[in-house]
Image 1 (tube, helix red, strand yellow):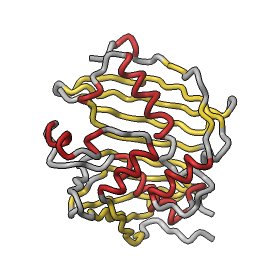
Image 2: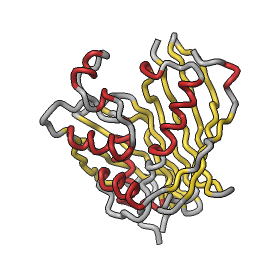
Image 3: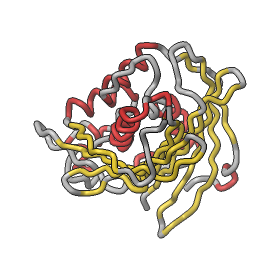
Image 4: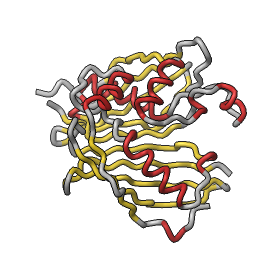
Length: 127
Length: 133
């Protein structure tokens, strides 16, 4: 059970992530993308997943029972090699539906102070 | 002049998913959850078999958007994961993605996506917003 006091709180990663050409190429090639110079629309999950996972584990959520319910991306611009991104994650909501806990985490990726993208992960913790 | 008009049906694109792709996606994305690679583990937690990462399925639907607009023109993209894509050993599973052009406002087009696997809809309310060139 997620501590309800944590809803609305934002956690910012201490370390930034430098996006490499290799990381973009590897992700793009798996999806069959032909443009290997910019990140595919869903690439950011490889940066934000770990952050939101550790945030929620630290918040008391049982990760072994988590199912990915929904994902949304809003991109200001594509991620490119050389971007130095910081990730801040906010638990936007946590509610209980028929015994299942439904948690939405928003992660924002910034390059310096410029927002590159926001992504929302909705996770269902099965009862 | 935009090549898209509201109501236009976008032809289906087929993506092949197999265990090799799941392993490669796990390595590229960092999501090493064993339900996507280990059959015995997947079954132990009540799944019929290994299932694809939801984000892989969504990533392939994202490729549909990149194909029609260029990845740099995809501004929004969202989907619900409503049914798992089951990937048995030594088997190719086909994800068929099609789309329909929705509202077009100020050079931005909404695209409604349909992602089917074995005649089952696997993504719910999947949609994107693309910038028209």
